[in-house]
Amino acid sequence: MTSASKKMVIALSVILAFGAIYYVFLKPVDKAADPAASDAQQAEELSSVYLSGLKTLEGETVEMDENKLIFLNVWATWCGPCNMEMPGIQKLYDKYKTHEKVAFYIISDENAETVNPFIERKGYKLPFYQYAGAYPPSLNGNAIPRTYIIHKGKILAQEIGASQWDRPEITDLIDRHLADI
Image (tube, rainbow, N blue to C red; front, top):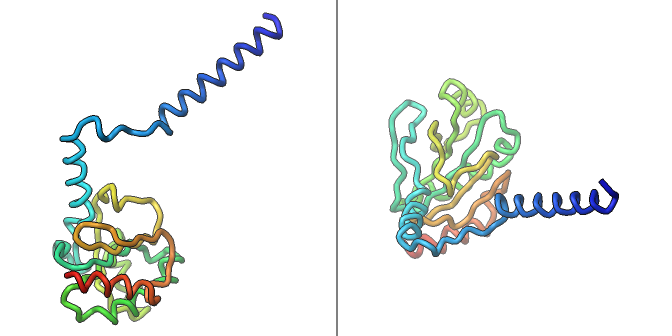
């Protein structure tokens, strides 16, 4: 094989590789091709922000209240960033805990034997829950902490990683949406 034909084979291989990468990873999905599938997908996305099968640390099954503005935080006792943001979540919860239109769900996949001593040691008075199922696509992620503020099936705010949840922008966002409820 000559030098020119080797270069041609390499160039064609590179073009084919880029084409394959584009097709597999980067090609936009045409959602308008099937309107019925699009409507079904939109309905799923609307309902998928609510988790079913949550359990209290006492083992009682709880359903998320879809009629409230929801603050949902996914965390773990061993997670440093989760521990950093928990005091701000406690302050936000203290501000809204008596509000009848707000619900907090602080969720871990750890068992009560792990979570309860942590809560007691830190003195948190938050509504902690266990969830062991697969998260819906709109809430799925492999990082913690991850937090969502949800209202009427829509995610109003989300944060992956630690955040300061008692800051004025968050309370303004919550108050603005509570005025609509």
